[in-house]
Length: 315
Image (cartoon, rainbow, N blue to C red):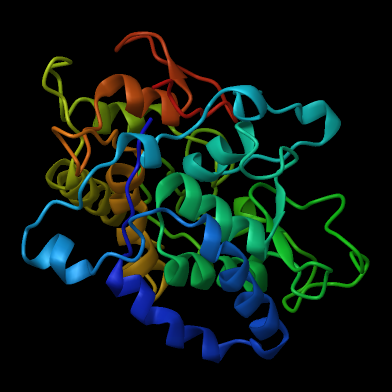
């Protein structure tokens, strides 16, 4: 797979939101995270965003620089849940852990999140630092050494001082971050009309709901021309929003988790999962690549979801 750099200005500008939380304890860690990733960042992360997007100029493509290694130490290894490996609702983070770009156990430091998302997906350092800091505060343990969080549920080991509670209580990971990090009307997760907003079919709010994935998949029925680009994801987002509003009387769409994070969840699917090439530097996200990143096997009509086995496709 080949990825390119993209910084989402809307979310990046939201860095100011973190001042509403106890960020002093994380300031040094966030600064250190950015400094440590400078030499490992995606080669296109410094390109002017106006040049790439507003003016409609393609971001460029360099096969050697953008190729993502999925062999050797980065070969796919499924999680060992019996041994305590953690996986959660974010297919991208699950894939990073399965390919050892993040620690395979699913607990990572703030710095590791920033470095891995930039190196593999080309996420801007500013956005990666903000999201990782927010995840550490809201769902992890900023008091641990190093500060970090789980990509799944509550961790069994989260660094030195792990006996201390996080700023908001015991660290729960992003599998328990509903309405803190993600919200109703998510791309492939559904929420029951109840105080817990558990999943309609599986009893939780983090497992993939296969019919939701099928709804997205069907928007591009022709395998030869399928491309789940931003136009397609916009339609899927509209469909999911309307479905959630109509089915959930407790529907909640917060100013951060809804207006900002929810939109990013849909955008990230294309921007980070699309396979870049010289012919398509913005990326093509076809059916096979989409299925691989969402841990789906089988053919349409007989899909099987394999929890936690999200993987970056071979080049």
